[in-house]
Image 1 (cartoon, rainbow, N blue to C red):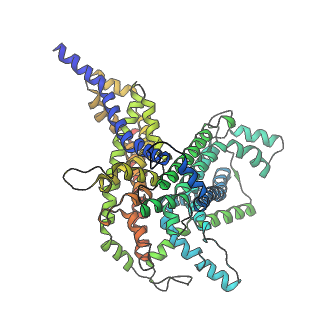
Image 2 (cartoon, rainbow, N blue to C red):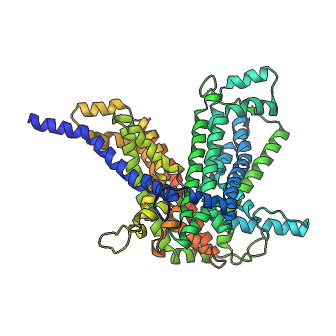
Image 3 (spheres, rainbow, N blue to C red):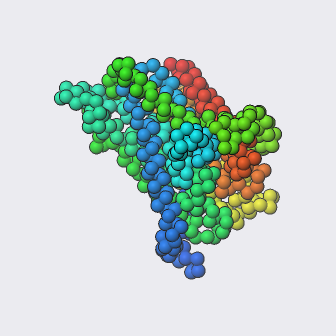
Length: 565
């Protein structure tokens, strides 16, 4: 009996290490090795197999690649600037002033995150393109047009509109943590208005701004779908995609471009980390009540509302354009569609039912994988003393810095010759590899939610359960999991909602249309004028799916918190 108990105790002590090993093997196989393979091929001599820099020399010697590199840097930096123009007023006004509708404004400002940028790109072309609604009116009444969507301008505008909430979220959090006494001291010394904002408020909120701006830079620099749909190919992600899909996975330039994308993404995430630390902008008291809100005079209130409404009109334009496109019969060289119909939705539901079904299956499986792995990593990190537990967190989080196109190329290179048993196909062409890619790409979001949920579970409850004889597995199942249900739901929904509209990785990994998710279907429909109505209808369906998932997430989390109170 004593021997059996000792064996059980030894197995129980080894269980965290076994779980650690399984998760580490999964992340190494499906995250680290594919990325390292891409980097290695970028430096590999195609003839001798040794290491060389000749591919990078060829890259920078090619005028097309040099232009694509500079264009990508320009688009990413310009998008950060324009996204800041959208985010700064909204964050400052809602944090600094008392005026009605601030909650509605913040809610509407987050809507662009529900729709991937490539979905709204075509809709913005119809609204702001050379022959779009706005320019048709400007040409008719004022005799000039504005190149909103011409060339790189279109990519900058679309990506800025979609990603500016990252700056808004982080900046608003920083403004809420500013020690109010710092502002009061500056006002006592005579500082006010724009000078107060420039010299005191903005520097103290710099950590949040830098963190948000870095995220925008990463997302824009790695964006593949928007340039493709706007027919802008002289950027790094489209060039990597075109090289691999047209020339083949043996072409070294696709790997060189991927290596550059990874390098800049890691650099931007490092800058974001430095910004979040904020050690150079520390306030005296953490969470010092935020800025002191003041009431607005009538003229000031009118000016604020004017700025806010203008920004909201711009950032919500893709959703309006997409809705009109999904309902319009013909929309070409006209301010509005010639007529309206529900036929596009019927076409989308009937002909693209497979896309919708695949999306629910893929995103659901990916979210389930993320919840299981995220919970395990969170528990190992916070409740055990396993050696190297922090590195597991770092490895899982590192996927934030890996562009989807790079991960897709890595999977094609690694698994193209791996035969699936009993199927007669390679692993790279198997639909399951799409699920794996989606789970790896979205794991950091689920992991953060799982960690937040576990932090709210007192360790004393677990100790009490184990003291009365419950095993660690039973304790986790009966005590920990129910108490962190809010975090688990948030992790599942966040992963599901973002995976449902992922394009970069799926565009690389879809081998046949029958296996394609809704994002791939939208991309196919948007390639032709006749299919754009159905594509827009699919886009609206995708937005509704993501919106419902987000709403349910908030409701379930709120319910869990009420039950715990």
